[in-house]
Image (cartoon, rainbow over the protein chains, first blue to last red):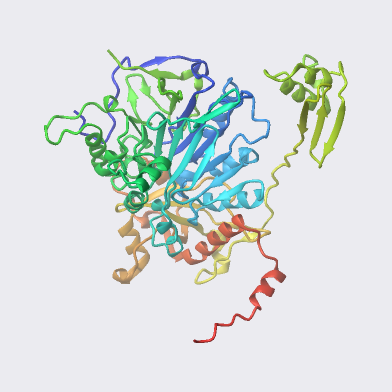
Length: 385
Length: 238
């Protein structure tokens, strides 16, 4: 039984060390990193290798300086990023979900290091008075027109290689109220759904055809720091359609999927604060893996909040009617950047995902929030006996 | 070629080494390496613009060499402290800190404190030095502290508010170190030294400037004057 907001240590035997992390990644695999930065977000997607063998990458938030550029340098020493794309754009898309320091505190440093390799930058268009915001804007001003600057709203879609990036929030209705400061800065967050693989055309010699892959792709929902007002708008913009048989519903379903919020991998909003999540949202997402980026209790705001974890657990494993206790978090697929096991911090995590879904390996790197990721300390999660 | 003593390599040699390294990647036709090493000659060379060389092989295939120089980042030229105007005495700003209400969760606010910003030669706020120190406060305590004797009249603290104040640096650094623990936040009076000025409006104006300058080119003085002189007439009433 789990009653605390402090993640319970995982039992011994959950991890198999393998110092050659890169050897476990096939060319067609997608790699997702969620770095351990305490209360904050820093995420990197390594896209599948293209025909020339090079990979590109997406960045979603850079909470602090140093750690992401260090990870990229570590990856460059492996076959995963040994060779950069010929066009120089390693990062076709970088996203600052919203201008809080725990999401863009390290963005100026990242852009100063890798800005020449960035093709497009997304931010919600909510101006903020902080140092990090000012410096990010100054970099983008100086980089113009080298970096395309975009403020997406719900429905904005970008296909990057085999990955589809769909913006769930902020909704247009929220976006139009930013100027009045009538919107909580957290609710300006760019929440995303990513789908992999997004490819739908099969090419056989000189023939090609559309392939229906509904329900067979891997999906991420990245909640950023969206709170109630934002999720309420998301539910309006992306209604559940699976009970509708009307032609219009079928057409929308074709475009957005049967249940736009359903996602296999759920990056829990706002560090599992009590305002970032409710039971209805968890049930709509129906995640197989839920990832929480926060300190493990304490910190500035005592994240993750227990009421939120209860909702997450109940959404994944309903027990209110039976009265049974919830299983341990790791059995529910709930993982924390702050988690520990008998050997210490589990630290940053990575998911290595094959397009068929046969492989969905979870790795940990045993770094503390202030450490760089050491790829040689990689351990693969295994279900203990 | 790459086995030579690296200290003997000229910049041109090093560029050529990079080119050869790319040419030797899997999937690249052998004739490209042969051309680069001088063992074969190309059919044609064509320069396009200032950054592209297109090389055609004997079978009609081409490869392209693109050159991009990345200029070093030049440190900004600082012209003096930002003067926010209002009640803040110009002569005092150098002693002040820039305090942003960055986040509010429930009853707790997180404040990010930096040294007072400078202006660069283009009028942009620059924050030389270290990363912000962060410290918590109860939002209600902060409201009361800022409102003074008429605390009931003070408005609620909001994210994005900015205060200009002197701080007890030693105390602030200690509190920032202690910040990663659960418990009651410190009182604002523990580290803020009165008077404390609300510069939120001026700071938001600078943020708005930064935003628009990042998304669209700035106007010259002439352009702005010309646009502001346009006589905007309301349509006649029906």
